[in-house]
Length: 275
Image (cartoon, rainbow, N blue to C red):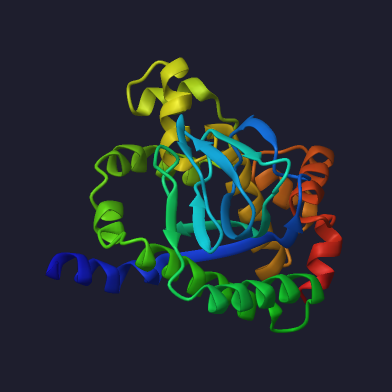
């Protein structure tokens, strides 16, 4: 227990969080869906209704006043009762500690009975309002709401070894060499075969192996790191957009399209907004 507490004290230092969507919804839209494996985590609070979710082949039946975390990259199906459909609050988010996803894609559903459902519902309502209303400090406040609810879900669900398990996943150290290679070779063309060779796996095995740990495919991860590097260069340097495209190994026109798809803004507009 002492080891787990010590790890828990260190882990948040590298924690990054990004909320991509938050909403309250009642009824069928967005719930009854066939198997998917999203690239983002989902947090839910069930207000009322009946239904089920299947995650990595295991079926669960969330009840009112329960919270659940569905990790990115897991295979997910969802159904809700026609006579008594779910009313639910939900948040789509990315969360990493350093380069590692906070919740593993080969993992389980984190589910719990909320100890104080009134508090969770009011906190989720605030998060949804902050996400849609905006404002100079809304991102910070929304992240605080999300972190509070994630902690409540793990705590109320009895996941006391969460940080310990996170630290002790041996597969992470193996994949670390691949992540280092990607980071230091963003300016070069990258092929699956190159990355697979680093961990001595056939490409057909490497792709699901990478996705199991990181929650996204190798090339999706490469693209995300290139976009993050472009954002950094646009924010902190005066490097020309064409030179930034070169530095991350992309043609200018393709880079501009990809960057706008990633951020919603062209590179020039993004630079203008953050300065």
